[in-house]
Length: 308
Image (cartoon, rainbow, N blue to C red):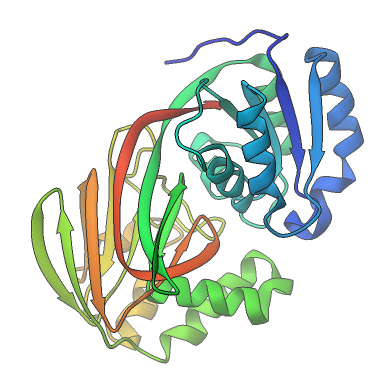
């Protein structure tokens, strides 16, 4: 279902200059000028330091912003949304537009073409689509923290891969993530996780998993091919007790989404999840490394509106 918004609504244009090796900066002035014609009350903000996007999100909520147009990658809306919701649900409904300028731009791939021009047009035409927001709690430095994501959460192996990518392979772009997968796989897995999905408990061992609100991660990896960002549920894809050879075989099928047909890959769909692990497992959400398990989450159905 779509709706329109008024041109005189308060609009923030937010640039993450660090995304995609500065990709967003290249066309920023031209994008700004086009949007300024459409939205005369446009407020422009540029992220200047780590965590600044979260502060901008807080500012937008406090100022009664009704529309945020971001230029960046998957981590940009993650930080903005967590700023918007830092003091609870914003008093006004905020509509988000994402102009891709990152390495993977995974979330937008669910909606087709990820060219900048397509998403600039989306920001200008005012049509929206409701999407789910995922609220979750986890532990960092012994404290429980609440955050939100819209794309994907990785538990254990997947978060380890992102950590390796960020620390050693970021310069390779999306290809670096694929290399990190292969490097990390050779270490294998040794864990026990107790999981509850919509009140139903079960246990897995020596496994990895992702919890996805949309189909793609790491650029073009179709990690959760049946996921729907607006169905009120998330898909948990479990790689169950896979050895190195098996997981490499599975990984080769991820780009087409056929890995879910492998007998050791299971998909669970639900609206509330809880995970406890021994040893504790590293977490990532929307490309950002966080803390560790225990973790619990719930889906907030159709909480956000995305300009499409």
